[in-house]
Image (spheres, rainbow, N blue to C red):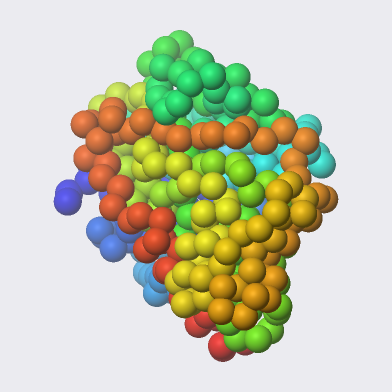
Length: 345
C-alpha cells in the first residue's frame, strides 16, 4: 500500500503500540522518528524482538511533552507529514495514585504537541491514541462514536481532555486531527504491569514450575480484547485521510478477566475450574486440584467500568479495519511469547 506520507513521527515508540506501528511503517519504506522521555534510554526491546531496532530509516529523539518549545522544535526539525501521538501515562491503576500526573502527561502533553503541530506542521495529519475509558460507566453497550463521554477514572479524564482537544482543534483551526478511541488491545509486547500480560507471564511461569499460582483483582470486569497490530494498522490508515475524525477501534466481543485467564491456561493444556465467590473465589487446575488463581482485594480499583465493548462499524467502513484474532489465539500468542522469554531467562 502506498501511503500519502513518507515521514512519520511516533511519540512513545518504546511502548507496545509504538513498536508495532513503527515496525509496520518501516516495513512499508516510511521514515520513522520515534520519541522517548529524556530520562529513558532510546533502546527498545520490543523493536529488537520485531527485528527493526537497527533499521536505517528509524531515528530516535528525546522529547519532554511538557515542554512546549521542545515540541515545536522537534516538529520543525522532523517535518513529519503524519504525527502519531501514543506517548503518555497508560495505566488506569497508576492514575489513582497520581491523578494530576496523568492529567498532565495525557491531557496537557497532547495539547502541547497539538499546538506545536498547528504552528509548525499545519498540513500534517495528527492521530491520537485515545481510550474507551472516556466512556466510563456507559449506560448502553456497545459504545460507538456517538456514545456520551463520561469518564469515571482519573485516567479516563486525562484521555477525555486529549480526545476533546482533538475535536476542538479540528473544528477551530481546520487541522487534520483524528482520535482513535482504542478499546483493550493486547499482544506479545504488552507491558507486564497490565493484567493481560500479568496473566500470560504468570501462566508461563506456572507451567515451567517457577510459580505456583496467580493473583488477580476484579475477575468480573468485562473488556473488548483485540490484537494491537491490527489496531495500529487502522491508525496508519487514519493518517492517509484528507480530514480528521473520531473512530472506535474494537473487536465487538467482550470477555471477563476470568475468561481471559481460563483461555491462557487452556493455551498450555492446563484447564482450570472456578469455585467460590467474591474475594474467596479461586481457580483450580482440573487435573490436580491445585489452586492456580486467587483474588487479591488490594488489586481492586476504586472505580472499574463493568462493561466496555465497542462498535467499530465506522472504522470498518472507512478505514478497512478488520480485526481477525479471537481471544483464544490472542492468549495463545501471548503465552507462547512469555514461555520463550522465561526459558531464555
